[in-house]
Image (cartoon, rainbow, N blue to C red; front, side, top):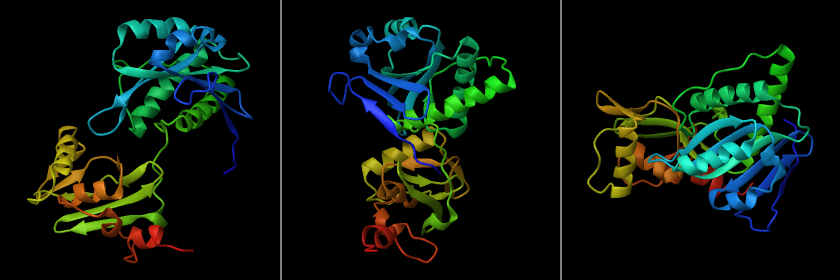
Amino acid sequence: MRGRTISIYIPDANPRSIKVCDTKDGVVKALFIPRNKIIDAIKRKELQDPGIYFLIGENNEVGKPRVYIGEAEVLLTRIKQHNSSKDFWNSVICFVSEKKNINKAHIKYLENYACNQAKKINKCELENNINPTQSSLTEQDEDFVLSFFEDIKLLIATLGYPIFEETKKDQSKILICKGKEAYATGEYSEDGFVVFKGSKSNLEESKGIGSWVSNIRKNLIEKKILKQEGNVFVFTEDYTFSSPSASAAVVLARSANGWTEWKDKKGKSIDETIRKNKN
């Protein structure tokens, strides 16, 4: 995989404020705007362009950001409307073309494609009630739009929201956590610890499980990410936890040190292979 050079410009020198992000070799520009900086962003020329945007809110009960995906021929007009009508979001990321070579058909296609990808990858809670209509494009334009989306995928992850990053199951890195009826597989990733779909978690919680672990399990059950099948709970989708210990505790239904509970196929814990590896 080839490397990419990404630049992030901070107009007011405040790293928590407006950011302008682009790639050295691409045409896509991202504009990150905290909601409390909308007035400051009005003067930005990029917001007069057509583009696709992502309204982003706080994480839900199971740690997924709430996201609304839309398109507009004049981004500023639509963002002002959402600022008055939608409550859930606290920042917006807009994507435009630096060459000004995208049109209404392009952005409608992008909106539909982005929504479908977000549903497929399932790393956010999509706030769109209706799936956007896909515009009809020529083969050449479709290739252009999909290339545009690849840069959107890269830039939105760079800005802290990897909602289009698929979990790649590297067989050489798969880890196992087991105990009683539990048997789970997963991988330690950049985003946390991913427990794979089909993993089994103990049904009964130990007396000393701790309220925080019990609450995580309750949320996962309510969201149907954990579903009872016989005498175990089964993960119905890949799920990313904040740490190895959080994931191990949920799988084992007790307090657990994930650094020693998760082991590779040779029986070595991630404490041995990662934290104590001196190579």
